Length: 280
Image (cartoon, rainbow, N blue to C red; front, top):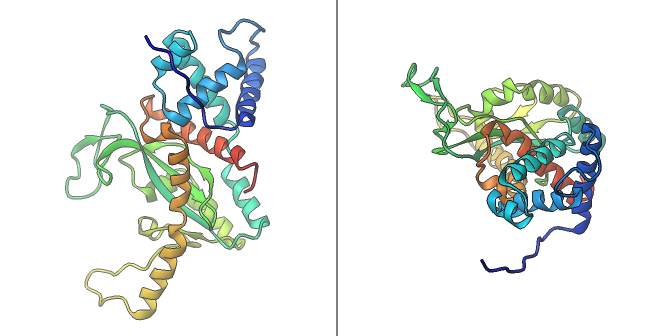
């Protein structure tokens, strides 16, 4: 065994924030002082190492001199506590209207995970009725969870959804998670949404590029210009998920239960918001 030094490149103030969240969670659970192997501060360091560098759990357990089972328990506890601080969709939309935003950007992403054996019956397409992997995304050709997110016009992440299996497409995910209804209501109050072709016909106020219908002539100059301008404005939303994934390497591949992906991404969003000190 060789010991070596390492630096966790997050602000100490973020560690104190996470430790305060964990201390509050311990009080809620009624945990008595001195009954834990790690203090809230040391647990916060463990959690941030996992989020920031995707450090394997067995290494975290060894470094903090705890068992692997305890390391997993501390990690899940922190994920749940942080995710509870994630903003509500309706609250976010109210705040963006009050801030005078011209629009918000809706998009979806796949958070990769380990192979999952669960299956489902395909209900659409040429292979209707076939048995397929529930968590496998044919679009991305990978196992993972579908996450919907909202971004500001300049591409900062505002809100992320719960997780749905990777086999679900973005439009059905947005409908099942009641995102479409909230965005339609916000559009009626002056806050429209920009989205890509995956959300075509999602609802009033959710603007998508114009699609060429089968058997119809090519799009005209006005339609092509509209698509160009809409795509350029919407493309900034890609920065939002890129900001989360590049800052928190744990989102590159989740080895925990795939049903936890939504809470993990929400926890990462809370950490990102705190790092930017409520700028948005």
